[in-house]
Image 1 (cartoon, helix red, strand yellow):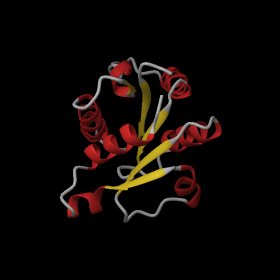
Image 2 (image 1 turned 90 degrees about the vertical axis):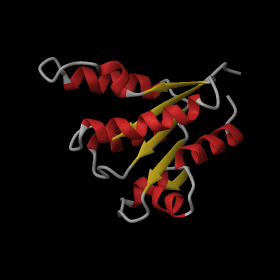
Image 3 (image 1 turned 45 degrees about the horizontal axis):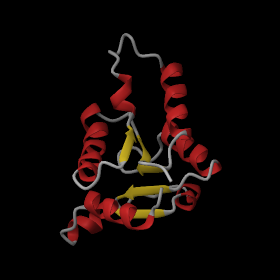
Length: 149
């Protein structure tokens, strides 16, 4: 049994603002770290840290995939850009490697059937908000209750 759960945060980084791409990841990490220290996040924003002139997309992709392959769980955000090529590739790799996937959706955007089928558990942000539920707390509760590492 490991000392911590390695979580990869998958979601659009291109075609959306940096703030949009970071904010859900930060909220998710804050929710986990407020409840447990037994998690380690692989968040692309935490290790890329390059200015646009230094950015190397090939290096970035290979680094992301290396961290993804080392993960125990993937949490994917599909609201900002459901057609993100990188996100969908990450889901395919995680699925192929048998890494469980938790998805965050808004219940209104149509995703391809394959995306729906590879995600093990969906959390609908609009339904959570309508019911006064903090979706990130709900995800943490689910993971701490149902995943053993």
